[in-house]
Image 1 (cartoon, one colour):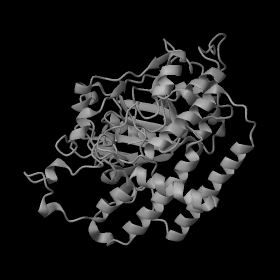
Image 2: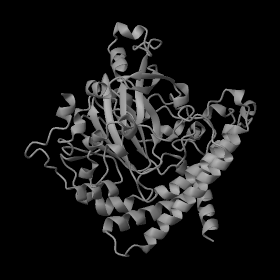
Image 3: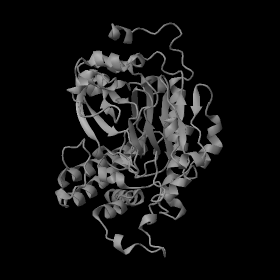
Image 4: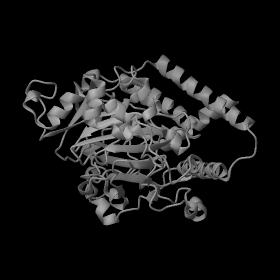
Length: 469
């Protein structure tokens, strides 16, 4: 019954959109600030994908959930700090409702009042591998990407309080469709050391200078997260479900080279350490560290893919749309700014001054903001600096040019937001010099410098130049 309802045909007039697919794609590819699309997915069958419906469709299929404590500490709850269980959606729903049956199930060791849980980053293509007809319930073609469906999307299911630490996405821009509940959370590869809901301002004093953009995403709305915007997301309803898809961008080709370089460095250095040192640097989703040979193959493939893309790009007709030209101009401006290096004031969270002023002055007024496309506006600096955004439980977004690292946990220790270029306040003597008792450098200190986005970007460019010659 539920499956038939999900695939029902659209009623007359139901599929009328405020923007054409061509216009929507133009907005997505050119807009450099977060925004929410409304009234674009009213006829999508995926809007019926609530937890009970999915539980019935999956019919006992188990998926992995990550569990974290609801208590708020100064350190973000990274994946390596969480627990994991495999359970069915039916068991998850029973646990979230406090049913007695959970006393002996996979969630039996986790009291609902103390823990949150979420099934993150679940590829719809894998979840519904035996039900490919469900792929068409997601219709990104309405956003100007024909052929993109649930097969190229991921599913997120979480309980109240479920969250992902502040991070940015390595590749592309991100479209997030809310299906059930308000504001889920979203996963990526580059994480900040700052717990933005409870920031340690003594350790990261420059976080006071950041400005948050806060939005509460409701069912049927689609959030656009532009490339390299920092964002923290938290579920504020008992059950939340969202679907997202990363839209590829030209800059992704170079980003993959940078990721490959980072992976080689991290694996080579961390693998040389004593494995019993208790530092959980490997992402729990990875079984073991990849070998140097495999990492080198990945790097060569990334470089080869970059030059294939470049050759194909050069062979295209010289004529291009104004938006394409603007994107290249913006990218060029960003590259020049990155080559400057890390200046004292540049260690703060980066703002629109990094290459976006031209876009804002000339094109922002052309974006059709209104009831169907809502800007995510900045919140007051006072509110964001004390982490009060968590009270509103919205999706916190910060703009940053940032780095493009892999999914190895140790790369997440890189802090771009606050104090890349200064010694933390608690490691200083009263005279302003580094505390002698805390000056012993660790492997992670070295990696923090090596995987700095400016360093990785420079190495990638030198490597591409060497390969080109």
